[in-house]
View 1 (cartoon, rainbow, N blue to C red):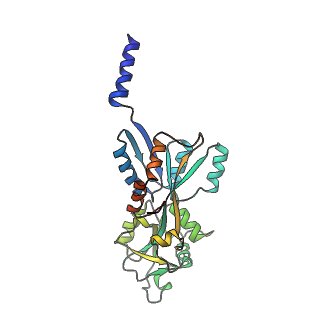
View 2 (spheres, rainbow, N blue to C red; view 1 turned 30 degrees about the vertical axis):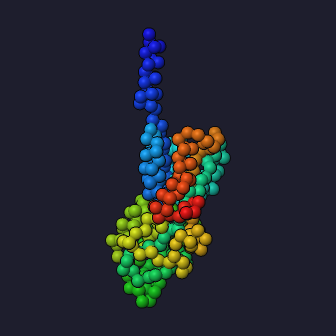
View 3 (cartoon, one colour; view 1 turned 120 degrees about the horizontal axis):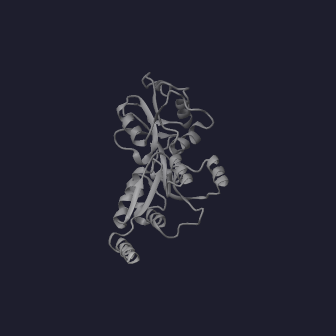
Length: 275
């Protein structure tokens, strides 16, 4: 009798309520907006899948892959050498999927009368050698430059450090912020400020300036003519093999489909597969 009742309960769970699959996605704040679009569209097509999405930074997502608390890690940067070494030591293997292209936009408050900046000038600002706008242009105001940056958990921070700062350290004058949206909103209301974040977050509240005379347009990003171009990834754990079926596989197929890549463009980035 007990076995019979247990069978009825299990059949009821499968046929009436069903087992809701879970999918956890953590990582890049840069990819958060497009990931939200992916999740919304994917959930409409797969209502039985419960998706959890967090955007606390690329390093956070990769760390979550190591400790098994995420299924997918969004990342706006490649693996660090230390992470590759950790994979070898832990005998874990993470695979990249290139999902979009991006340009790290350099933005200033609308009242800043600067239209272009060089990589060297950016380095000088963020290392503290240049502190006033008139040091860039004698016609600019002799006002302090208020520089903002993403925090150190950010993949955008890591790419900016690699492409702009090199081996130099960021000045303690630079103010760290937790998200791309926080940078956007802060620059919009802070006179004489400058910041950097993914081009998908740019809106009319700030002014984008060119870098080495090149604007972060779609064509310039794809050709890597724009100096701060970069790929965007999702990483998955393939220690036990590539996910050919199941929720992770379904989600990966969706984001790389024509519909998923259209959402990349809708979010303001450049589709990996071209549109």
